[in-house]
Image (cartoon, rainbow, N blue to C red; front, side, top):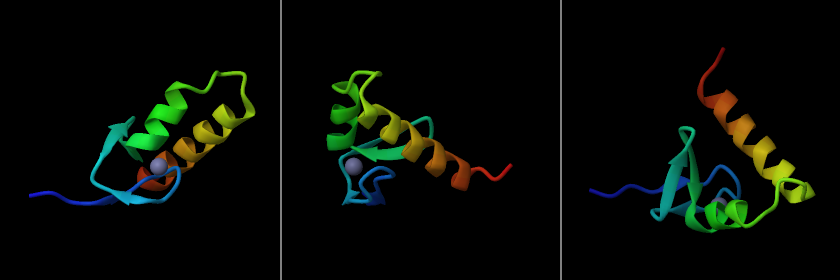
Amino acid sequence: MSHKDHCSICEKKTEKGIYLLRVYICEECEEEMINTPADDPKYEYFVKRMAKAHKSMIPS
Ligand SMILES: [Zn+2]
């Protein structure tokens, strides 16, 4: 059984994704994150999206 999930970064529905810190992200975003240096403004965007998705998933 396969199920599609929404990527927490680009919101694309895909089966080809992984759970990173329990946040689902697609293959493409994973690769982009890996290839983005930490001092790149884009990296901060990824981190923020991840944090937001993480927060909405686990209410504190
Ligand atoms: Zn994505």
